[in-house]
Image (tube, rainbow, N blue to C red):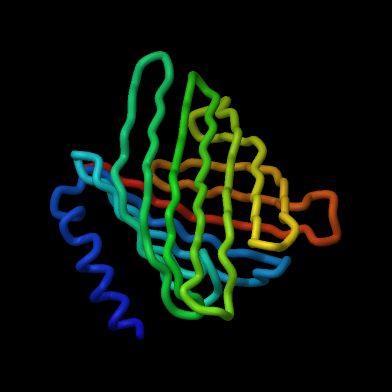
Length: 201
């Protein structure tokens, strides 16, 4: 399974990597909650012309790989913004089709970004769902930022799950160490720790 995934990953992001202008590797570790002690790695690449590719594991479901691609549109004036429509697939524990969008906006030391997707399950043992992860923050120092975050999950024919949280991050050179605490005042609170490496070519 893993060798097949690596082959598909190479075919998926090979053309993007060839003309790459920026990218990153993200690693998140969940402590507590329903995803107790799960690890979520994410790789993303973007070419000079804005073509975008992303590969991730355990993000959409445990033991599930996901591949997504799209194109980024951005602008830089009084506001720095970007929007990336996405299409993708997931396979493994859950098989499905993904349509989504990433959006970010920055002004001075304030920022907002969100990742939203709708997943169509390809098998009857899973149900279609909508998911979004959003962050609002302020960066008072070059190496420090903080703010609020929220996860929203809406499974078809089920009640929506809303999980608010707090965000704190430290940046050292090209490494960023984000920390999230979701459901802070609830007994169902859980922690997410990350290590992210970004580069530009």
